[in-house]
Image (tube, rainbow, N blue to C red; front, top):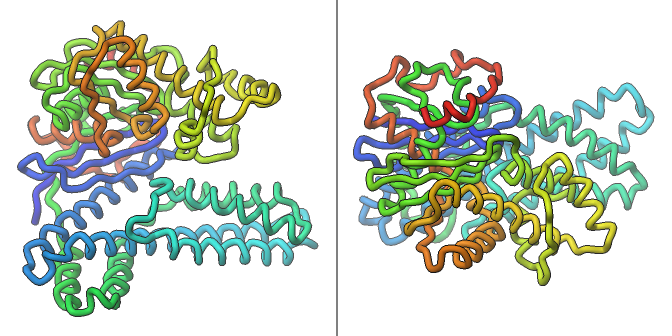
Length: 463
Protein backbone atom coordinates (compact mmCIF):
# COMPACT_ATOMS: atom_id res chain seq x y z
CA UNK A 1 0.00 0.00 0.00
CA UNK A 2 1.45 3.37 -1.04
CA UNK A 3 1.34 6.22 1.48
CA UNK A 4 0.23 9.55 0.01
CA UNK A 5 -0.66 13.13 0.82
CA UNK A 6 -3.36 15.02 -1.07
CA UNK A 7 -3.70 18.70 -1.92
CA UNK A 8 -7.04 19.97 -3.24
CA UNK A 9 -7.40 23.38 -4.90
CA UNK A 10 -11.11 24.13 -5.09
CA UNK A 11 -11.21 26.96 -7.64
CA UNK A 12 -14.16 28.84 -9.07
CA UNK A 13 -13.69 27.51 -12.61
CA UNK A 14 -11.59 24.36 -12.10
CA UNK A 15 -10.87 22.05 -9.20
CA UNK A 16 -7.47 20.39 -8.99
CA UNK A 17 -6.08 17.57 -6.83
CA UNK A 18 -2.51 16.34 -6.43
CA UNK A 19 -1.19 13.11 -4.90
CA UNK A 20 2.25 13.43 -3.29
CA UNK A 21 4.34 10.48 -2.09
CA UNK A 22 6.39 10.38 1.11
CA UNK A 23 9.47 11.71 -0.72
CA UNK A 24 7.49 14.74 -1.97
CA UNK A 25 7.34 13.44 -5.54
CA UNK A 26 4.15 14.16 -7.45
CA UNK A 27 2.37 10.86 -8.07
CA UNK A 28 -0.85 12.04 -9.68
CA UNK A 29 -2.78 15.08 -10.87
CA UNK A 30 -6.50 15.44 -11.41
CA UNK A 31 -8.54 18.32 -12.76
CA UNK A 32 -12.18 19.00 -13.53
CA UNK A 33 -14.33 22.02 -14.18
CA UNK A 34 -15.94 23.15 -10.93
CA UNK A 35 -19.48 23.48 -12.29
CA UNK A 36 -21.95 24.76 -9.69
CA UNK A 37 -21.34 21.71 -7.51
CA UNK A 38 -18.17 21.92 -5.41
CA UNK A 39 -18.91 18.57 -3.77
CA UNK A 40 -18.86 16.69 -7.05
CA UNK A 41 -15.90 18.70 -8.35
CA UNK A 42 -13.81 17.64 -5.33
CA UNK A 43 -14.80 14.03 -5.80
CA UNK A 44 -13.98 13.99 -9.52
CA UNK A 45 -10.65 15.84 -9.14
CA UNK A 46 -9.55 13.48 -6.37
CA UNK A 47 -10.58 10.40 -8.37
CA UNK A 48 -8.79 11.68 -11.46
CA UNK A 49 -5.63 12.31 -9.42
CA UNK A 50 -5.79 8.78 -8.03
CA UNK A 51 -6.11 7.34 -11.53
CA UNK A 52 -3.21 9.48 -12.71
CA UNK A 53 -1.20 8.14 -9.76
CA UNK A 54 -2.00 4.59 -10.88
CA UNK A 55 -0.63 5.42 -14.33
CA UNK A 56 2.56 6.81 -12.76
CA UNK A 57 3.01 3.61 -10.76
CA UNK A 58 2.22 1.55 -13.87
CA UNK A 59 4.92 3.45 -15.76
CA UNK A 60 7.44 2.72 -13.00
CA UNK A 61 6.49 -0.96 -12.96
CA UNK A 62 6.70 -1.41 -16.73
CA UNK A 63 9.90 0.66 -16.80
CA UNK A 64 11.48 -1.88 -14.49
CA UNK A 65 10.59 -4.72 -16.86
CA UNK A 66 13.56 -5.31 -19.24
CA UNK A 67 11.23 -6.61 -21.98
CA UNK A 68 9.08 -3.47 -21.94
CA UNK A 69 11.61 -0.76 -21.03
CA UNK A 70 12.75 -0.05 -24.59
CA UNK A 71 9.15 0.64 -25.68
CA UNK A 72 7.95 2.17 -22.41
CA UNK A 73 6.97 5.61 -23.75
CA UNK A 74 5.04 4.15 -26.65
CA UNK A 75 3.24 1.63 -24.42
CA UNK A 76 2.26 4.31 -21.88
CA UNK A 77 1.15 6.81 -24.55
CA UNK A 78 -1.14 4.24 -26.12
CA UNK A 79 -2.53 3.05 -22.77
CA UNK A 80 -3.24 6.65 -21.73
CA UNK A 81 -4.94 7.49 -25.03
CA UNK A 82 -7.08 4.35 -24.97
CA UNK A 83 -8.03 5.00 -21.35
CA UNK A 84 -9.06 8.58 -22.23
CA UNK A 85 -11.00 7.25 -25.22
CA UNK A 86 -12.90 4.77 -23.02
CA UNK A 87 -13.83 7.53 -20.57
CA UNK A 88 -14.88 9.88 -23.37
CA UNK A 89 -17.06 7.20 -24.99
CA UNK A 90 -18.73 6.51 -21.64
CA UNK A 91 -19.54 10.21 -21.26
CA UNK A 92 -20.81 10.44 -24.86
CA UNK A 93 -23.08 7.47 -24.20
CA UNK A 94 -24.49 9.20 -21.12
CA UNK A 95 -24.94 12.43 -23.06
CA UNK A 96 -26.74 10.64 -25.90
CA UNK A 97 -29.10 9.00 -23.39
CA UNK A 98 -29.85 12.33 -21.72
CA UNK A 99 -30.52 14.06 -25.04
CA UNK A 100 -32.80 11.22 -26.15
CA UNK A 101 -34.69 11.34 -22.86
CA UNK A 102 -35.24 15.10 -23.12
CA UNK A 103 -36.53 14.94 -26.70
CA UNK A 104 -38.83 11.99 -25.94
CA UNK A 105 -40.34 13.94 -23.06
CA UNK A 106 -41.00 17.14 -24.98
CA UNK A 107 -44.29 18.66 -23.95
CA UNK A 108 -44.30 20.92 -26.97
CA UNK A 109 -43.26 19.98 -30.53
CA UNK A 110 -44.30 16.36 -30.00
CA UNK A 111 -45.03 16.04 -33.71
CA UNK A 112 -41.34 16.72 -34.43
CA UNK A 113 -39.94 14.18 -31.97
CA UNK A 114 -38.93 11.50 -34.49
CA UNK A 115 -37.15 13.97 -36.78
CA UNK A 116 -35.10 15.42 -33.94
CA UNK A 117 -34.27 12.02 -32.49
CA UNK A 118 -32.92 10.94 -35.88
CA UNK A 119 -30.91 14.16 -36.10
CA UNK A 120 -29.44 13.56 -32.64
CA UNK A 121 -28.51 9.99 -33.56
CA UNK A 122 -26.69 11.23 -36.66
CA UNK A 123 -24.76 13.80 -34.62
CA UNK A 124 -23.76 11.36 -31.89
CA UNK A 125 -22.75 8.66 -34.37
CA UNK A 126 -20.34 11.20 -35.81
CA UNK A 127 -19.04 12.22 -32.37
CA UNK A 128 -18.26 8.58 -31.55
CA UNK A 129 -16.42 8.02 -34.84
CA UNK A 130 -14.51 11.25 -34.37
CA UNK A 131 -13.44 10.23 -30.87
CA UNK A 132 -11.59 7.19 -32.24
CA UNK A 133 -9.58 9.56 -34.47
CA UNK A 134 -8.94 12.20 -31.82
CA UNK A 135 -7.61 10.03 -28.99
CA UNK A 136 -4.36 8.95 -30.54
CA UNK A 137 -0.75 9.39 -29.31
CA UNK A 138 0.63 12.73 -30.48
CA UNK A 139 -2.80 14.19 -31.33
CA UNK A 140 -3.27 17.81 -30.34
CA UNK A 141 -5.24 18.08 -27.09
CA UNK A 142 -7.97 20.72 -27.49
CA UNK A 143 -9.13 20.71 -23.89
CA UNK A 144 -8.97 18.75 -20.63
CA UNK A 145 -12.72 18.84 -20.25
CA UNK A 146 -15.45 16.73 -21.80
CA UNK A 147 -17.79 19.74 -22.00
CA UNK A 148 -15.40 21.68 -24.24
CA UNK A 149 -14.67 18.75 -26.53
CA UNK A 150 -18.29 17.65 -26.87
CA UNK A 151 -19.69 21.15 -27.27
CA UNK A 152 -17.30 22.18 -30.01
CA UNK A 153 -18.02 19.12 -32.18
CA UNK A 154 -21.72 18.97 -31.39
CA UNK A 155 -22.32 22.58 -32.48
CA UNK A 156 -20.52 22.04 -35.78
CA UNK A 157 -22.50 18.90 -36.55
CA UNK A 158 -25.78 20.41 -35.40
CA UNK A 159 -25.22 23.30 -37.79
CA UNK A 160 -24.69 20.90 -40.70
CA UNK A 161 -27.57 18.58 -39.84
CA UNK A 162 -30.13 21.35 -39.27
CA UNK A 163 -29.27 22.95 -42.63
CA UNK A 164 -29.60 19.65 -44.47
CA UNK A 165 -32.90 18.69 -42.83
CA UNK A 166 -34.49 22.11 -42.33
CA UNK A 167 -34.60 21.73 -38.54
CA UNK A 168 -34.13 24.31 -35.80
CA UNK A 169 -30.49 24.72 -34.75
CA UNK A 170 -31.56 26.58 -31.62
CA UNK A 171 -33.81 23.74 -30.52
CA UNK A 172 -31.01 21.19 -30.84
CA UNK A 173 -28.62 23.43 -28.91
CA UNK A 174 -31.23 23.93 -26.20
CA UNK A 175 -31.55 20.17 -25.74
CA UNK A 176 -27.76 19.80 -25.66
CA UNK A 177 -27.34 22.54 -23.04
CA UNK A 178 -29.88 20.85 -20.76
CA UNK A 179 -28.29 17.42 -21.23
CA UNK A 180 -24.63 18.40 -20.75
CA UNK A 181 -25.38 19.82 -17.30
CA UNK A 182 -26.89 16.51 -16.23
CA UNK A 183 -23.85 14.61 -17.51
CA UNK A 184 -21.45 16.99 -15.79
CA UNK A 185 -23.13 16.26 -12.50
CA UNK A 186 -22.05 12.62 -12.61
CA UNK A 187 -18.72 11.04 -11.79
CA UNK A 188 -17.29 8.85 -14.54
CA UNK A 189 -13.94 8.13 -12.88
CA UNK A 190 -15.62 5.38 -10.87
CA UNK A 191 -15.52 3.21 -13.97
CA UNK A 192 -11.72 3.26 -14.06
CA UNK A 193 -11.41 -0.54 -13.95
CA UNK A 194 -13.60 -0.80 -17.05
CA UNK A 195 -11.50 1.90 -18.79
CA UNK A 196 -8.23 0.16 -17.87
CA UNK A 197 -9.53 -3.15 -19.22
CA UNK A 198 -10.58 -1.42 -22.46
CA UNK A 199 -7.16 0.25 -22.80
CA UNK A 200 -5.23 -2.92 -22.00
CA UNK A 201 -7.22 -5.06 -24.44
CA UNK A 202 -6.78 -2.60 -27.32
CA UNK A 203 -3.08 -2.01 -26.69
CA UNK A 204 -2.04 -5.66 -26.41
CA UNK A 205 -3.80 -6.36 -29.72
CA UNK A 206 -1.60 -3.80 -31.48
CA UNK A 207 0.99 -5.56 -33.65
CA UNK A 208 3.93 -3.74 -32.08
CA UNK A 209 2.97 -4.85 -28.53
CA UNK A 210 1.70 -8.42 -29.11
CA UNK A 211 4.93 -9.95 -27.80
CA UNK A 212 4.52 -7.96 -24.56
CA UNK A 213 0.93 -9.00 -23.92
CA UNK A 214 1.65 -11.02 -20.77
CA UNK A 215 3.89 -8.34 -19.26
CA UNK A 216 1.41 -5.54 -19.91
CA UNK A 217 -1.62 -7.51 -18.68
CA UNK A 218 0.13 -8.52 -15.44
CA UNK A 219 1.26 -4.94 -14.73
CA UNK A 220 -2.17 -3.44 -15.43
CA UNK A 221 -3.87 -6.03 -13.19
CA UNK A 222 -1.43 -5.26 -10.37
CA UNK A 223 -1.98 -1.51 -10.65
CA UNK A 224 -5.76 -1.89 -10.80
CA UNK A 225 -5.71 -3.59 -7.38
CA UNK A 226 -3.40 -0.99 -5.82
CA UNK A 227 -4.68 0.77 -2.71
CA UNK A 228 -3.49 4.11 -1.34
CA UNK A 229 -3.01 4.96 2.31
CA UNK A 230 -3.88 8.67 2.58
CA UNK A 231 -2.01 10.19 5.52
CA UNK A 232 -3.26 13.77 5.30
CA UNK A 233 -5.19 16.11 3.02
CA UNK A 234 -5.08 19.92 2.84
CA UNK A 235 -7.54 22.08 0.93
CA UNK A 236 -7.14 25.51 -0.60
CA UNK A 237 -8.77 27.65 -3.28
CA UNK A 238 -11.78 29.87 -3.67
CA UNK A 239 -14.19 27.26 -2.29
CA UNK A 240 -11.93 25.86 0.44
CA UNK A 241 -14.36 26.74 3.21
CA UNK A 242 -16.79 24.16 1.85
CA UNK A 243 -14.29 21.39 2.62
CA UNK A 244 -15.12 19.39 5.77
CA UNK A 245 -11.67 19.76 7.29
CA UNK A 246 -10.36 21.14 10.55
CA UNK A 247 -8.77 24.58 10.24
CA UNK A 248 -5.32 22.94 10.33
CA UNK A 249 -6.16 21.33 7.00
CA UNK A 250 -7.12 24.55 5.22
CA UNK A 251 -4.56 26.97 3.73
CA UNK A 252 -4.98 30.22 1.82
CA UNK A 253 -4.43 30.26 -1.94
CA UNK A 254 -1.58 32.73 -1.56
CA UNK A 255 0.40 30.51 0.80
CA UNK A 256 -0.17 27.45 -1.39
CA UNK A 257 0.73 29.17 -4.67
CA UNK A 258 3.88 30.62 -3.10
CA UNK A 259 5.02 27.25 -1.76
CA UNK A 260 3.93 25.37 -4.89
CA UNK A 261 5.84 27.75 -7.19
CA UNK A 262 8.95 27.43 -4.97
CA UNK A 263 8.65 23.61 -5.14
CA UNK A 264 8.54 23.71 -8.94
CA UNK A 265 11.22 26.38 -9.33
CA UNK A 266 13.33 26.72 -6.13
CA UNK A 267 14.90 30.05 -7.18
CA UNK A 268 11.54 31.76 -7.64
CA UNK A 269 11.26 35.22 -6.08
CA UNK A 270 8.06 36.54 -7.65
CA UNK A 271 4.86 34.64 -8.47
CA UNK A 272 1.91 35.74 -10.59
CA UNK A 273 -1.23 33.61 -10.41
CA UNK A 274 -4.22 34.41 -12.63
CA UNK A 275 -7.08 32.19 -11.59
CA UNK A 276 -10.78 32.09 -12.30
CA UNK A 277 -11.88 34.79 -9.87
CA UNK A 278 -8.74 36.64 -8.86
CA UNK A 279 -5.20 37.61 -9.74
CA UNK A 280 -2.44 37.33 -7.16
CA UNK A 281 1.01 38.92 -7.23
CA UNK A 282 3.19 37.21 -4.60
CA UNK A 283 6.75 37.71 -3.35
CA UNK A 284 8.41 34.71 -1.65
CA UNK A 285 11.69 34.13 0.21
CA UNK A 286 14.22 31.37 -0.36
CA UNK A 287 12.01 28.83 1.41
CA UNK A 288 8.84 29.62 -0.49
CA UNK A 289 7.36 31.62 2.40
CA UNK A 290 5.22 34.59 1.34
CA UNK A 291 6.75 37.98 2.21
CA UNK A 292 4.20 40.24 0.51
CA UNK A 293 1.31 40.04 -1.90
CA UNK A 294 -1.33 42.01 -3.77
CA UNK A 295 -4.56 40.79 -5.34
CA UNK A 296 -7.61 42.22 -7.04
CA UNK A 297 -10.23 42.82 -4.41
CA UNK A 298 -13.39 43.97 -6.19
CA UNK A 299 -14.44 41.64 -8.99
CA UNK A 300 -13.29 39.01 -11.47
CA UNK A 301 -12.26 41.56 -14.10
CA UNK A 302 -9.23 40.38 -16.00
CA UNK A 303 -9.36 36.82 -14.61
CA UNK A 304 -10.25 33.40 -15.98
CA UNK A 305 -13.99 33.98 -15.63
CA UNK A 306 -13.63 37.03 -17.82
CA UNK A 307 -12.04 34.95 -20.59
CA UNK A 308 -14.78 32.36 -20.16
CA UNK A 309 -17.40 35.07 -20.64
CA UNK A 310 -15.66 36.32 -23.77
CA UNK A 311 -15.50 32.76 -25.13
CA UNK A 312 -19.24 32.35 -24.57
CA UNK A 313 -19.93 35.64 -26.36
CA UNK A 314 -17.86 34.45 -29.32
CA UNK A 315 -19.46 31.00 -29.25
CA UNK A 316 -16.15 29.17 -28.88
CA UNK A 317 -14.20 27.29 -26.22
CA UNK A 318 -11.83 29.06 -23.82
CA UNK A 319 -8.99 26.95 -25.21
CA UNK A 320 -9.53 28.53 -28.64
CA UNK A 321 -9.05 32.14 -27.50
CA UNK A 322 -5.27 32.13 -27.17
CA UNK A 323 -4.49 30.49 -30.54
CA UNK A 324 -6.89 32.85 -32.33
CA UNK A 325 -5.40 35.92 -30.59
CA UNK A 326 -1.91 34.83 -31.70
CA UNK A 327 -2.98 35.23 -35.35
CA UNK A 328 -3.62 38.96 -34.83
CA UNK A 329 -1.66 41.46 -36.89
CA UNK A 330 -2.93 44.58 -35.14
CA UNK A 331 -4.23 44.34 -31.56
CA UNK A 332 -7.23 46.52 -30.73
CA UNK A 333 -6.81 48.80 -27.73
CA UNK A 334 -9.22 47.68 -25.00
CA UNK A 335 -10.00 50.21 -22.29
CA UNK A 336 -11.76 48.00 -19.78
CA UNK A 337 -11.63 44.38 -18.60
CA UNK A 338 -14.94 44.71 -16.76
CA UNK A 339 -16.82 41.43 -17.12
CA UNK A 340 -20.17 43.18 -16.86
CA UNK A 341 -19.57 45.37 -19.91
CA UNK A 342 -17.37 42.92 -21.82
CA UNK A 343 -20.19 41.57 -23.98
CA UNK A 344 -21.41 45.03 -25.03
CA UNK A 345 -17.90 46.25 -25.84
CA UNK A 346 -17.15 43.07 -27.77
CA UNK A 347 -20.28 43.39 -29.88
CA UNK A 348 -19.57 47.06 -30.48
CA UNK A 349 -16.04 46.31 -31.70
CA UNK A 350 -17.33 43.59 -34.03
CA UNK A 351 -19.99 45.98 -35.36
CA UNK A 352 -17.20 48.46 -36.21
CA UNK A 353 -15.64 45.75 -38.35
CA UNK A 354 -12.76 44.85 -36.04
CA UNK A 355 -11.46 41.31 -36.49
CA UNK A 356 -12.03 38.73 -33.75
CA UNK A 357 -8.33 37.96 -33.47
CA UNK A 358 -7.40 41.65 -33.10
CA UNK A 359 -10.01 42.16 -30.38
CA UNK A 360 -8.80 39.07 -28.53
CA UNK A 361 -5.16 40.20 -28.75
CA UNK A 362 -6.20 43.51 -27.19
CA UNK A 363 -8.16 41.74 -24.46
CA UNK A 364 -5.22 39.56 -23.49
CA UNK A 365 -2.92 42.57 -23.32
CA UNK A 366 -5.44 44.42 -21.13
CA UNK A 367 -5.59 41.46 -18.73
CA UNK A 368 -1.81 41.35 -18.37
CA UNK A 369 -1.61 45.13 -17.96
CA UNK A 370 -3.91 44.81 -14.99
CA UNK A 371 -1.70 42.05 -13.55
CA UNK A 372 1.40 44.21 -14.06
CA UNK A 373 -0.12 46.85 -11.81
CA UNK A 374 -0.54 44.28 -9.03
CA UNK A 375 3.01 43.06 -9.50
CA UNK A 376 4.34 46.60 -9.14
CA UNK A 377 2.35 47.16 -5.94
CA UNK A 378 3.55 43.84 -4.45
CA UNK A 379 7.20 44.81 -4.84
CA UNK A 380 7.93 44.47 -8.55
CA UNK A 381 9.33 41.55 -10.52
CA UNK A 382 12.56 39.82 -9.52
CA UNK A 383 14.35 36.99 -11.25
CA UNK A 384 13.20 34.26 -11.15
CA UNK A 385 9.58 34.99 -11.96
CA UNK A 386 6.97 32.20 -12.07
CA UNK A 387 3.59 32.44 -13.80
CA UNK A 388 0.92 30.05 -12.46
CA UNK A 389 -2.80 29.38 -12.76
CA UNK A 390 -5.05 28.37 -15.61
CA UNK A 391 -4.31 31.49 -17.66
CA UNK A 392 -0.62 30.47 -17.71
CA UNK A 393 -1.69 27.88 -20.29
CA UNK A 394 -2.92 30.61 -22.65
CA UNK A 395 -0.23 31.34 -25.24
CA UNK A 396 -1.53 34.84 -25.99
CA UNK A 397 -1.43 35.76 -22.29
CA UNK A 398 2.11 34.38 -22.02
CA UNK A 399 3.26 36.37 -25.06
CA UNK A 400 1.75 39.58 -23.68
CA UNK A 401 3.32 38.96 -20.26
CA UNK A 402 6.80 38.33 -21.64
CA UNK A 403 6.61 41.51 -23.72
CA UNK A 404 5.47 43.70 -20.84
CA UNK A 405 7.96 42.17 -18.37
CA UNK A 406 10.77 42.86 -20.82
CA UNK A 407 9.59 46.45 -21.39
CA UNK A 408 9.26 47.21 -17.67
CA UNK A 409 11.93 45.10 -15.94
CA UNK A 410 14.38 44.05 -18.62
CA UNK A 411 15.60 40.49 -18.99
CA UNK A 412 13.96 38.33 -16.33
CA UNK A 413 13.90 34.53 -16.21
CA UNK A 414 10.25 33.52 -16.53
CA UNK A 415 9.18 30.04 -15.41
CA UNK A 416 6.00 28.46 -16.72
CA UNK A 417 5.49 24.82 -15.86
CA UNK A 418 3.26 22.47 -17.82
CA UNK A 419 1.80 21.81 -14.35
CA UNK A 420 1.19 25.53 -13.71
CA UNK A 421 -2.54 25.04 -13.16
CA UNK A 422 -1.74 22.56 -10.34
CA UNK A 423 0.54 24.95 -8.43
CA UNK A 424 -1.98 25.66 -5.66
CA UNK A 425 -2.80 21.97 -5.22
CA UNK A 426 0.92 21.12 -5.11
CA UNK A 427 1.40 23.72 -2.36
CA UNK A 428 -1.55 22.27 -0.44
CA UNK A 429 -0.13 18.74 -0.76
CA UNK A 430 3.22 19.99 0.57
CA UNK A 431 1.48 21.53 3.58
CA UNK A 432 -0.28 18.17 4.09
CA UNK A 433 3.10 16.42 4.08
CA UNK A 434 4.93 18.89 6.32
CA UNK A 435 2.22 19.69 8.86
CA UNK A 436 0.78 17.37 11.54
CA UNK A 437 -2.01 15.06 10.53
CA UNK A 438 -5.44 16.64 10.55
CA UNK A 439 -8.66 15.27 11.98
CA UNK A 440 -9.72 13.77 8.64
CA UNK A 441 -6.84 12.21 6.69
CA UNK A 442 -8.69 11.69 3.41
CA UNK A 443 -11.50 13.60 1.76
CA UNK A 444 -14.81 12.12 2.84
CA UNK A 445 -17.24 13.23 0.20
CA UNK A 446 -20.27 12.50 2.34
CA UNK A 447 -19.14 15.17 4.79
CA UNK A 448 -18.75 17.89 2.22
CA UNK A 449 -21.08 20.79 2.69
CA UNK A 450 -22.68 21.75 -0.58
CA UNK A 451 -23.31 25.30 0.53
CA UNK A 452 -21.18 27.63 -1.53
CA UNK A 453 -20.02 29.97 1.15
CA UNK A 454 -18.56 33.27 0.21
CA UNK A 455 -14.80 33.57 0.20
CA UNK A 456 -13.12 35.18 3.17
CA UNK A 457 -12.42 38.91 3.12
CA UNK A 458 -9.15 39.78 1.43
CA UNK A 459 -7.54 40.72 4.73
CA UNK A 460 -7.93 37.11 5.86
CA UNK A 461 -6.52 35.56 2.69
CA UNK A 462 -2.98 35.51 4.05
CA UNK A 463 -3.99 34.12 7.44
